[in-house]
Image 1 (spheres, rainbow, N blue to C red):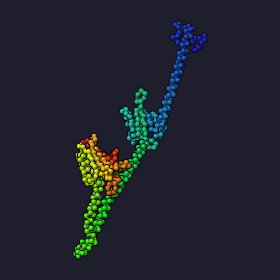
Image 2 (image 1 turned 180 degrees about the vertical axis):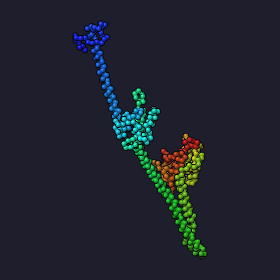
Image 3 (image 1 turned 90 degrees about the vertical axis):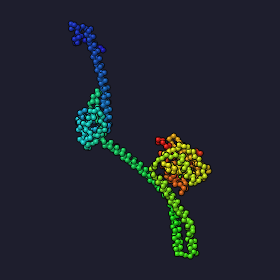
Image 4 (image 1 turned 90 degrees about the horizontal axis):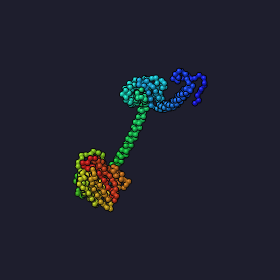
Amino acid sequence: MSLPHDDGAPPVLPASGLGADGAVPGAEAEQAWISVIQKMDETYAELLAQQVELEAKNEALEEAHAFIAGVMASMTDVLIACDLAGRIEQVNVAAERLFGRPASVLQVQRLADLIAPESPASFSDVLTTVARRERIADRDFTFLTPEGPLPVSVNGAIRFDPRGRAVGITLMGRPVGELRKAYSDLAAAHERLKETQQQLVQAEKMASLGRLVAGVAHELNNPISFVYGNAHTMKRYAERLATYLDALHGAPSPAAVSGLRGELKIDRTLAELGPTLAGMLEGAERVRDIVADLRRFSSDRRQGDEAVDMAGLVRSALDWVAKAQQPDVAIFTDLPDGLDVTGHPGQLHQVMMNLVQNALDALEGAPVRRLEITGRREGERVVVRVRDSGPGIAPDILSRVFDPFFTTKPVGKGTGLGLSICYRIVQEHEGTLAAANAPEGGAVMTLSLPAAGSTP
Ligand SMILES: Nc1ncnc2c1ncn2[C@@H]1O[C@H](COP(=O)(O)OP(=O)(O)O)[C@@H](O)[C@H]1O
Ligand SMILES: [Mg+2]
């Protein structure tokens, strides 16, 4: 840098720059000038740098400010910042909207003035919570708004300055109406869903009731018409016999009696009386059995439990069914000791009898007639498999064999209730019953029950 220099009066220098006698020598004076100007230069450069830094900081600050203002403005929740005395310092657009006043007006008010007297929570509640250094969580306030008192759910916390001193309280609120509406919308949707579900269940119940009633009607129709027909025959017989007896009381000649006897078919009537009555009885018994089956089907009461040896039970079921029918079937059993379960022997017996009966039915007309029953203890369970060499169960009906009244047997032979009753009984014994086809042909029914003493 060139130095402004003239040969006129020397510059006034600080006292320290003066010689002892107060006079300044020429070279020294020049040096003093240079150092002064250098100092000025340095200071100026420093100032410039500080100015640039300040401007950058200011810009960052303005950006941060704009960002915060943008966030606050975009919030749908109401935001109120106040000092520890409850004087409002800042609000957002949502708060302006809620209170119907601009920020400039709100910012000179006290928070307490915005709270309705009937508000469940008050400003002093806020202060108490804050004093305990706790958060304000979902407190119900009622704020005074141009539309009247409005319930608002408020969350908030204490605000600190950069040095960690508590300086104020920030509150955030959402009108409860909105929450309630969202909640009631949800509740209504849930209600509709439940209703639809109930309707579906009801429809299903009605459908299965319909199937049940149709099945029962079909089942009962046969024996009832049998009883009905026989009753009519009996009526005819009774009339003939009454006529015959009346004639006998009139003491007719033996020839007349004999003629009447032939005419009224008395001998045939007497001969058929027994079978006709037996037929009626059979029909009535069938009706009774169907009703008993139905009763069992509808009762889910589990009667007294006792120890049941499945091996003995299987043998007895085989005996009963086989004795009654004497089928031409080769029967194999493999029933080791220790197949004990706990349950109702009568009901389990019924299950086995049904399974054996179905197997025998399936073997009717089969080229190989073989029935095999095995019992196994498999871990905590007793598993009994009933396998026959019949035609097996067609895959498309496998899933339906347990349905009540599902039968492929001719009317009068099958009720279609057997397996569904078995299924229910087994279920009540915490067991399972499954139908499948054996790889080598024929059906295999697998009954699995918890072994006695096992913990299910
Ligand atoms: N061992 C089996 N082999 C082939 N089909 C079977 C066997 N057991 C059951 N089914 C089928 O399941 C149906 C339903 O059986 P079930 O409920 O006992 O009624 P039902 O014996 O009166 O027909 C039978 O009609 C038959 O089609
Ligand atoms: Mg059956």
